[in-house]
Length: 410
Image 1 (tube, one colour):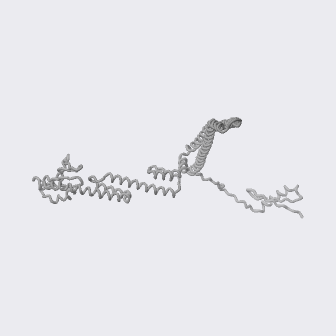
Image 2 (image 1 turned 180 degrees about the vertical axis):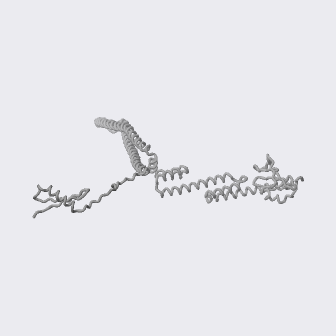
Image 3 (image 1 turned 30 degrees about the vertical axis):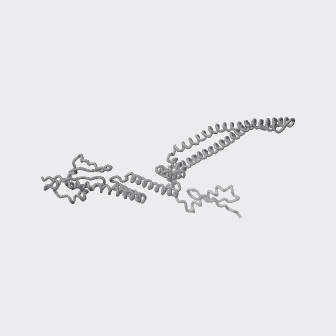
């Protein structure tokens, strides 16, 4: 039975069927061409042609903002790593410096103790020889003195060797410290230069990184500044901590403490201003104004208790001044004036004319309490009014004034 293998090849134009019969390879080209022509005549074409160009996939170009964000993220990583390396280098150098200084101090102390012991060796030798001479005689004394001489010589050699070693160690450590200072300074300089180079390339990113790195330190410093009463410094440090994304809960607590400290300071300022007023003339009016200002500032609860006590004292003093001014006002009224009594002040108004057009008044004099005496002052510029101020019309002596009294007719 002959076996036939069918090969189907697809091209961009039309399918081609090739028949290869085993055993007749020599006639294969002719058979293939014949069957291909038959296929062309009998089989319909299934290939579809399109006049449209193939679709092209167009990549979407990134925006400048996206590129900038990508660069900023990379810059942040590099600057954070450089800053971390610099801080680690500083910490390591500090640890190594402390270790070298501790070792140098120990070597110096060891050398000092050895030197003291060596300096005191001669005295110990003399003391021991005197004791031997006191308690020993003859050959025993000679043998003991020889032993003392030999033992102290050995001890002296040991101490001299130990002192030389300790001093040499201290000198070596000092040399190492000097060399390490130069090496450490160079290492720090290189690390700082590298960090400065990165920060110069992206200063805004560098600022954020440094704020984030010192956020907790700034927060702690802000709280300490509040305790020290440096509220402006505390506010600046707290803003830096917030910019560095410090712990929100701790930031909120610090803000609350700072706000309370500000209120307390404002209240202390109000209390100091009230104390400065004392019970001088006009104190009642000024203290009331301070109370209103404290209410507007939101610290009335802290200021009002003290202000009320000061206001009570000021009222007593004002009443005493009023009692002192009343006889003077009565006398002025008897002379035809309309006195207006204030706190430590008496105005004397006088009617100067009366006609069909109305009445004219002038401020004749002002009496001011200075110390324990009343001084009279005359206005430099005449003050004339067709209509009296409300404080004059509210005066108790105005109602007792007789129209036309002491007023020349015109």
